[in-house]
Image (cartoon, rainbow, N blue to C red; front, side, top):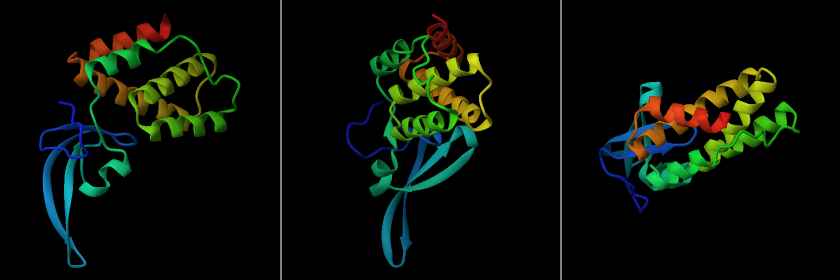
Length: 165
C-alpha cells in the first residue's frame, strides 16, 4: 500500500493534507499551451469531488502515500491528555495548527487533534478552530483506519481513549 517514490498508481489511497483522503482514479494526459502533461485524477470522498493534480507537482503540493500501520499506531499512541498550546491566544493557536496541517504528516495532524480537543474542554472553540479540529480529526481517523485495517468506529474510540487518558 505504501509507495516509496513520488509516483502513484490507479487505486492507491493518498493523503492530500489540506483536503483529505483520496483515491487515484486515473492518470491522464492533458495539453496546455501545446505542452502535454500527466495528471492524477484524485477522488476526495469527504467532499465527493474529483481533482486533477499535475504528477510533477504532487509532492510539492503535499500529496503523499498512506502511512504504515506502525506510523499510524505511533501517531495515535503519541496523543496525550495535555494541551500543549494553552498559553497562546486563539489567532496564534490557529496559525500554528494550520502550519501543522499544511505539514501533512500524521503526527502533525494528531498534534492538532490533541491541542484543539483539550482546548475545547476549557472553552468553546472559535468557528475556524472548530472546523480545523473536525477536519484534522476526520483525516486522522480515515488515514489510521486504512493504515491499521480497522473500522472508523474502532479508530475513533482509540483516539478518544488517548485524549481522555
